[in-house]
Image 1 (cartoon, rainbow, N blue to C red):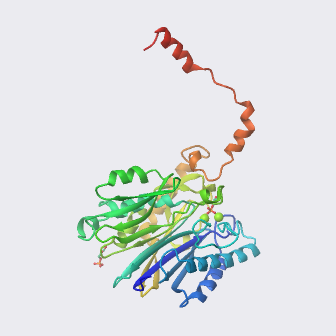
Image 2 (tube, rainbow, N blue to C red):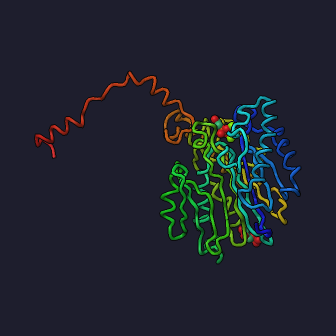
Length: 383
Ligand code: 13P
Ligand code: 13P
Ligand code: MG
Ligand code: MG
């Protein structure tokens, strides 16, 4: 453990909604704050607790490094306390993301999502913490590409000499449990070939190539594969470092001015727009959505979290919200048809196999048209 280094850990879980999957009420945030408050000075330096929809986000700073058992146990305890309240209040899906009976080692694989990075705090260390609901980690593929590899988004890629050597993207194959690092700008096309497939690939980390400094990290836990059955979308969080050799705060926010379609929304089974919102508006309800993303800006001061500045509350994002709602109207018209509905491999909650099981004896073979063609070919009637 390098004591010069600060770790930012953002750990999130859905432990119950008021009502349905819409919102984590204040009582749950207070329960988490109670647990984290007791750990200040002992384990953590500072914390901020918030929620996006039904997901509770614990933003913590400390000096224990990433994947630290004590920090993860602390988050687990906070979620357990909140779950007790959620159960008392009979909130919907109480304890939804705490899949294990007990904590073991770290929260990865147990249900909660986590995004953590360790670095030496710069003289001024601005960071942006993104929290989402009703979508999945690959929702960050497009914006992270734009932030760190698209000069039309990020002027700094052209103008800031410490960024011109580009960024390295650590891409996870979340189905095959493999990872690969791709360097931009020269491997841009290979990177896009992978991350454009949001079913399989998710960006986990981004590094600045000049000095290998960590620039961004995303939670990529896939609840559906962990639990083996639908237990809610793995609504992600991410941390991005800003300014002085990293993209400016405004460059980090810019991709969200033009909302993109992400997987999630109702029953984790639909495409829909990702709407940037302030903390007050992170309250998805229409068709359980549309998917939300909040951006909280902090300055670190010796690990203290100064802020947040609720960045998407800016009027500059009003038009993005309007556009997102128009996109929502357009795609909602498709109802249960693709492309509103996700392809079956991406649906996190489907009864289609049960429908098929019920109908299996009623299926009849189609006329064998291809065989007819083969016969004609044998006779030399067709090429
Ligand atoms: P300031 O001149 O306000 O520091 O802004 C520089 C910058 O990076 C704007 O994106
Ligand atoms: P969450 O993943 O936010 O719990 O939502 C699940 C769902 O079914 C929404 O309709
Ligand atoms: Mg939920
Ligand atoms: Mg959620």
